[in-house]
Length: 352
Image (tube, rainbow, N blue to C red):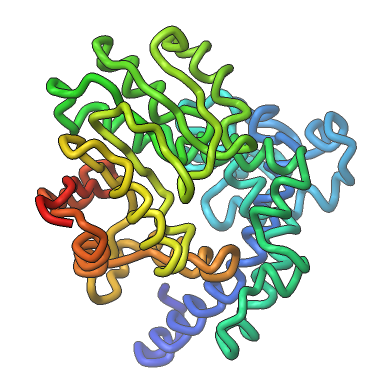
């Protein structure tokens, strides 16, 4: 930023103030993203440039208000405004299209929803007391609230499927499945990860294991992928029981949901039931031991889990300590192998 007539020191001070104000206004961007995701505007714009009057007419929105929101998003790199009141999509904005292979429309709608914003308003008290912001705001824990709202639950599981797609492809490509016969995906949700793995490796069979609510959409996902004949869907509680007939157990983006006590309980449940010859593959974020500005999303997720469910992200030493304490031996840690997620491979220790 260079402002004519100002000395270098003043220009730099203004640049820093602008950078801070942009960050302060981040929630404004989030609200604007939620609006256009809910309205499905990216699907209406597609590869074209559309007038805000056309978009307002097609969505029933107020045109002057919609134009101002689209203009804000143009300023932060989501839309473009090549002519006054006519808007297109940037490459980033195109991720809000439902037909994008990397679509984040459902993800945007969830994370920019009133449910999320209400919980995040309790961040200050949560930091002061350690209490769960979501529980304080909603009067119940997140998973109970999710199960009670069938419409939002369906959207949430769509969002988790979107989040899984990139990592699923990387896991299927990066892990050596040649010696694996049956894969159990613990906390596998709608089956996106396992469907991708089975598609890439036709010799495999698998089981998607999650809560009844979690696996509700899995049969349709597996059928669409053409792997339903090689995959079972099993509802259950992985704190109480898990399938015992696998030789590879994948847990993706699950440990972040839980505090240390519950995460250790989950690992103990796995250790008690895994065949001695089986392998546990944890796919998730591994935090650097000191904050890394290049991994901001990981820290968003870490604090989000603190707000919503009391969970957390962990460093490699923390994962190693938990696995060792519950009877596992870490065989490898591949940072970023499931881009941007990492893969931790562990096996049951010889002595419990």
